[in-house]
Amino acid sequence: MTDVSAVPESADEDAFGIDAFTLDDRLRLFHFAAAEKRHEYLWLLRAFDRGRANYQVLLHASDAAGFLKRLAADHPGVAAVGDVQSLLDALADWQVLDRSYDGTRAANLAEYRNRHYVYQFTQAGYRAYRAVEEVLGARLEDAQLSRLVFPDILADLHALADANAAGDAEEVYRKLGRLDSVLGEMAQRAARFYLMLGDLARTNDTRPEVFLAHKDALLAHMREFTAELGRYAPLLAEAVEETAATGVDRMIEHAAEADERLFRSPAERLEDWRQRWQGIVHWFAEREHSEAERLQDATVTAIRSILALLRRVTEARRGGVSRESQLRHLAQWFASCASDEDAHALFQAAFGLGAPRHIAVPYLDPELIPGRTSWWEAEPVELARTLVQSGRSPGLHGPGRIERNEAQRDRLRGEQLKQQVERRTAAASLAADGAHGRVLDEAETRVLLALMDVALAARVPASRSVGAAAGSAHGVRLTLTPVQGSTTVHTVRGNLHLNGLRLEVTA
Image (tube, rainbow, N blue to C red):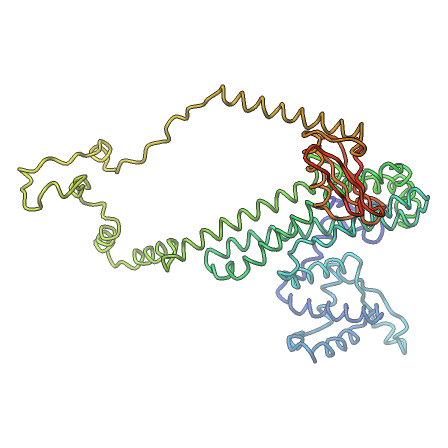
């Protein structure tokens, strides 16, 4: 996340390097992207980037021209670059390039007085150039949700807990930094993905075939991501709590100790790593308002939006042409009318609102009145009051009053609360007395089967024991641990045999 308050309005007297760039200096870095010769500036900066990749940082004007000739072999657009020296001077004035004097190129006194200059990227200028290149090279494939990252995050959290317990400062620094970068990248990917969905919905207004070509892949991608996030969210929250149990302050101190940023004070390093850890906690450990839960809700909402958009496209294409296309053609006909009379005639033909509308109202049962009967002899047609007074057809009546049975609602609510109390009591009994060596009653059996459904649905390691699975509900936790042979749980419904597994229920 960009810290806006960190952007200086004015230069500090003690600052140097990129910190000496004020807000106006940073904005001027992007002048080359909007200048008249923006394509020439871009190719020249790409030549400097090519030299930087070849470890040739300082370039003279002739060196830059040489790199441009190499680029011209693969890119014909480089040939449009004109005077290199004037372009270099402009980029130096914008502080994209740094200009310094090179006395080694002077072979005599005359050349020494000619002031040979060499150029290189400034740190801020290189970042501005890379930002422009990222925008130019952005593709639709960059906007996708990363579901394969959750196992790595879970493994890194366990490794972070082990390193913090062992006092390995360097490993704590590496794992905590990697978790912070992975979460930042996942947030950016999600933001780009949902923006892409909005662009796709707007594109559908003119080209519905683009949406229809990608709908299946989008729905499958979002459903798989939601399933993975639902599986790993409780495991990641538990891993964060286990890591915090090893000592948060100790972990922050280890990370700050191994941090090699020279221009940060120890207090600033501690505060920076504490904020990063708070971000990880905010992502997974806040049960009700975590970022993981918000991301899952946003994905489910996006799935509903895609399905609604698919329904709208399908209904629009069912008649061969959409309602929007019809209105566009009609508007074009109105714009092409030569006179107001033609426009009024087209309006009358399209909408038929000029004549008295009550004249065309039919009988409720037209077969009762013969067609040869005169209007003077036939029974009058009943007309709605709104049609006679305002010319509008009567609308549909609102929904009728809903009869609420408060007694039935109270009874159902009481039964629901009673069942919740029974489930909690049965869960507490399972945690206190265990599941083995006795016969479980009906309520305990239902709670045990529900906990086993949650544990088997995850099917990923929930503890350090390989192959273990766990699930929690009603304030208790069920853990399935691999054992030799089989175990049996006796219930009122019969015996539950677990081959190679043993279950334990704890509070």
